[in-house]
Length: 517
Image (cartoon, rainbow, N blue to C red; front, side, top):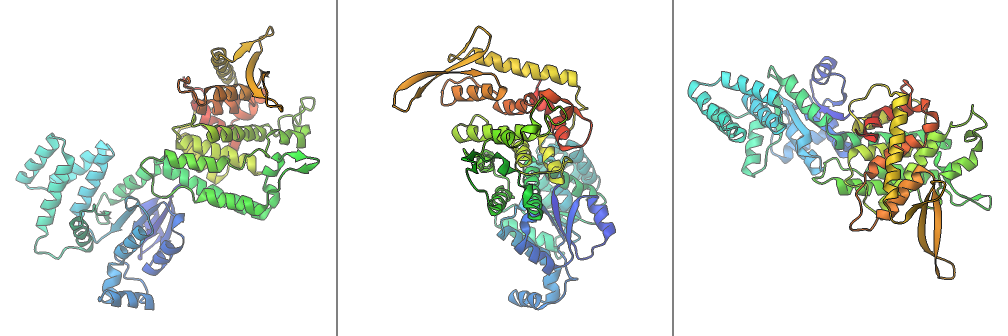
């Protein structure tokens, strides 16, 4: 869920419920409180809703100094101080598009035109038609006819410009309100002014809801919010108990000693780096940002970290002769191998690209489940990130159908291996990979290895195709998702349970993406 900063000096709980329903809202009721938040903890928020008139703010020394600086009265300054907050937000790099004025100091008709333009940009034709009907019903006949000409040509931008000129003309001779004066200054600088909704509009709540919902569907913002919330939670989780760092279980043991040390401060710094990685403003081409974020995410899974170390440390949880214990840590083991493979793949190739919020969210989720001891129950930050993976959940997964899907995925990978020139089959039907390596004496020699496991097979496909200009294209994101299922197929009940625990919830979210029809 995105986080909203709402600045409103006549706040009541009833107003918050009416305007925002059950959304996550932080309220600041005066100019000074809002200014402090903007200066000190702006990264907490994804969207900003401002009132222009904040006259109920205390006339403090700071307010007096600002009013004196601009040579206006303290009251006049506070009546327009929402505009100052807007400019402070821009100075801090907050995107203008993610700020909206909810105010009585905006022209009602101009607000409707802004909403019309926004709805058309989003191809929201139901809202477009509704606003057009409201506007044209209140126009004189000749003006309505002119509007119809633009509508017939589907030239909505020219229609909006015409309506703005028309409504501003009706205000000639009157002192323009605060918002309109601000917009005029913006237009003189050839800059699109900020968006506003007049509180007095009958449809104002609906318009605000449309604006909020537009960003609540934005996968980039949802991903960013989930990462920030996740890193914050995990930091507090290990501060309460350093034993919650599970990552140390994967450190190689050499001469009965861990190959490396991992201090708690290193893990905290890692989480801080991840939480601050994605900027609040979505880049035009986010792929390079996703690539750098993913490399940072998987960087810790270096050569001194091995998934197999978990089995060596807790053999009792992987022995088939102890059915009550077998498989208890198999999900963690699976997550660790996913991250090891991903680190190798993104370090030497771009086969997972183009990257998207779906795969980044999936890998972040499994990475943190591997690195930290977490309850079986799904955590709030995980619910946010799962919205990136899949907005709609499928019904509970049928084990028989799933078994067939897993088998088909394995067969498809085998079919790819058959077409590779360095792969052969022995008399038992095992896949044999042949490679040329350099020995200690510097001489080249031929080596053969048997490919039994799914992870080894998809890694060989990755190695074979990396660096080849005419490489066959494969769905490497799909391989990672399918590995999640293949490596746990010995106990599908954990994946198909109807509970809201993390593992079956994740499984339901990724099922349709893992086995596309």
